Amino acid sequence: MKKYVCNICGYVYDPEVGDPANGIAAGTPFEELPDDWCCPDCGVGKDDFAPEE
Amino acid sequence: MKETVFGAVRISEHVWWVGAADWNVRNFHGYLTDRGSSYNAFLIVDEKVTLIDAVKAPFTKEMLDRVASVIDPEKIDYIVSNHSEPDHSGGLPEVIAAVKPEKVFASVIGAKTLAAYYGELNVTPVKTGDTISIGSGNLAFVDTKMLHWPDSMVTYYDADKLLFSQDAFGMHLAGSMMWADEYDKSLLEYEARKYFANIINLQAPKVLALLDSLPGLGLDIQMVLPDHGPMWRTQEDIAWILSLYRDFAEQKPRPRALVAYATMWHSTGILATAFAEGVRSAGVEVHLADLAENDRSSIMTHVAYSGLIAFGAPTMNNQMFPAMADTLCYVKGLKPQNKLGFAFGSCGWSGEGAKQISAELEAMGVEQPEKFIQVKYMPTADELTAIRDCGKRLAEQLLEKCK
Image (spheres, rainbow over the protein chains, first blue to last red):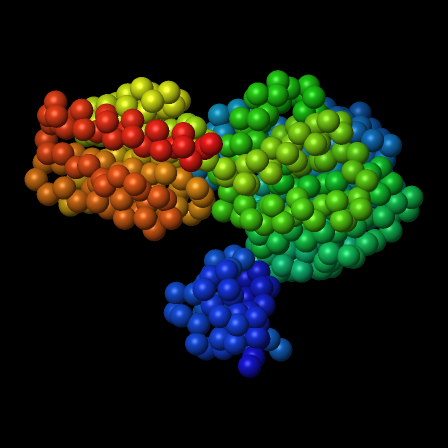
């Protein structure tokens, strides 16, 4: 599973870790995050993420 | 060194303050700065002459004049931009053009942000753990992402043991005195609280993490130099502001209430007064604020300081009164925690206002033990008694919660 990086603040979404503080279980691929999920650091939406190079 | 109108203020062996006071700014991007503000910038005269941060654009000449009182500005080798917001970077393009520094440093995101604002400035990105030698001492950088912008960082200068803390530990307060120990503490506490509530509150968990990580960084900090307001030069004052920040960030409930309301024909105003009377009767301090007379940043300061927050508004055109929508939108973004809340309002025919306020409080995670109260036209004596009793019950619950 691919990691995704926030273009605004640099936060890295790691699917192996998920985002448990916001109800996202470990093992959730980026593509399966809910549409209203947003960067836990700066608050932007999924559109502002890009696959990690 | 030359004779200039604006002088620099020496603050340590190698460092001078070269900033500016903005005495008359009252609207700082919507934040009511009723004591003005200041933009602190610093000149380090070491082997590499270094400017730490700049000022808002209109004050650039004043800053360069202060620099010139110490050293020819063209001798500046390095510039460090801890934070790209225009109140600290607005003067940068002019300074860079005038000084032609060897290097400009900012965080990785800061380098991108500065380029987005001003075009390419050839900024060298730095990150936590990076240090640069400037002669007798080193500059060490610590990323403080989202405190309070993605680009934010702080810089430590080990020769003089100074932390350039950017917006952290600052406040909007113009004054001719430089140091926190030259001001009344209750004034500093109020302005620091207002600053935290309106600028930093939404990132409170990151503040706690940073405070917890500070001792581990092993920095011997003799002075903390923020970019706004008085600076901290005694160990006692540094410990005081750090403990205040912990207190602000923890957001523990306080036995204090805010009743903020909008009103058209004073019906909601009467409800607000009756609710406040109930709170007061339970022995809880209460502050009443009409949104027509109080700006949103002052309301937010009370929200942060109050364990119980009640909001009331009339219904206008099937919506809550617009001033309340403005205030709630602002408060919601700043993510206050651990609040008891209450919604109320009055209406002529269709009463959506109180319900909409209640929904906003719900979305903020504010606990509402009492259902909202909505009255028509003018509150009756029974309705006033009911809302007063509601205020009393909520105040009593708050006292329990604060134990």
